[in-house]
Image (cartoon, rainbow, N blue to C red; front, side, top):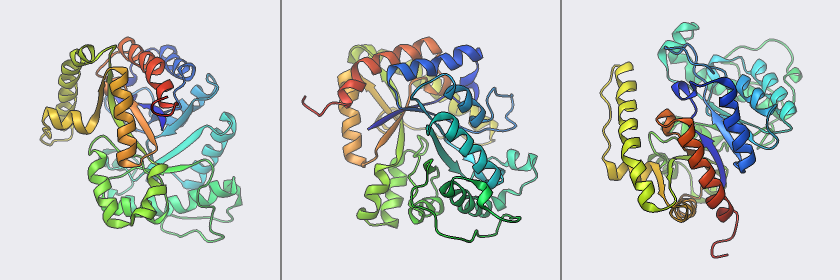
Length: 332
């Protein structure tokens, strides 16, 4: 299973820039496969990294093998030909280490700020994807001739099924999940809602023989709480759960809605990997076998609830004890 990092978004990025980049230099040395960043524009209060591509360029300049992915680029905000050129440049600069994750986006204030009607998001997303995939399949946006506008379907030869760099899609609605199946796009499953609900929808949309190769290229996410033994990890859970609950309430207040309460046992079962290194190894193998999903995005920092020192300690323990076990056959 590919093992990536996630959780550095919005307020979680509030630290010295050099210290922030050092986290991913360390992740590269430790053997993690990749890291994923989201795109948030016009956030209040202001956040340090609204552009994941600018951040990716800085990380590529300081690492040797770590991949960087976008989870997600809000595709309706971009002209797909300009975006394709940017992605091709990053692909070249990094030696092929960029992963493209796209989504429709749902933040009304962002769309309002740039003058795009939110109700146009799906049309712009689907039309933008078609042109983006065509441009990435040819390796250059310059192959497109003449002007293009949203709502227009690109013409020309059908692109290769899995263009380089790879494109992923994020979403939880039946419409987006159906779009992923129809276009053979691997999915970036979220923590909220957890992938169980999305998998249930997918299994209603397509037969197992269609889903199996798609899921093998897809990625899910978990909060990871690891300690030298199970008791030590258990002692870390309650403070983190309290911090996550406060975070949920904070964003619910910002969005003018009531927070969704999830009981402790459901939270731990659906969104956490926790325990000793052996517990985490077993849980990851079980998760891969049960879902068929081929990549895991580990959130060691509780989406900003934990500081960099605690996060790095957990990453180092995981890299020392769990990563080698996952790369070896079970029982070896």
